[in-house]
Amino acid sequence: QVQLVESGGGLVQAGNSLRLSCGASGLTLSYNNMAWFRQPPGKERELVAAIRYTGSTTYNGDSVKGRFTISTDNAKNTVYLQMNSLKPEDTAIYYCASSFPTYALTLTSPSDYNHWGPGTQVTVSS
Image (tube, rainbow, N blue to C red):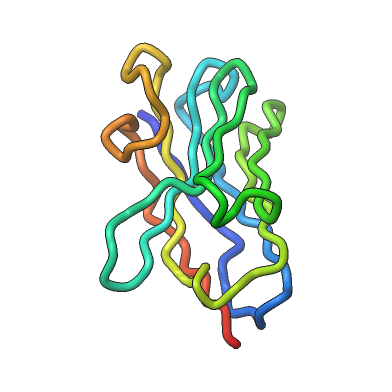
């Protein structure tokens, strides 16, 4: 049974950094596509970053590119999201997601993933 558990969220001031972690069990990272999504208050869930099982990465346009970095530690079966230069508009619940590569051809939609963590809150104050 696949289980994803996020950690590392919290309250930070704008300009600071956070690193989110997603511990995975019941799957092998190197055989799965992994992603971070976020859901701001009152808005839909959106992709932040994804990493294909091959190691290639995708980021959600200009909103996070250059500030956020997704990475994996296969030995620890953990996915990370390094978030630098945080802005108040980054405030959201951040979710970790996974899917086997044959589940979906794309990486950018929530429907491309069939396993989700419970989420971790990130709040950025101005």
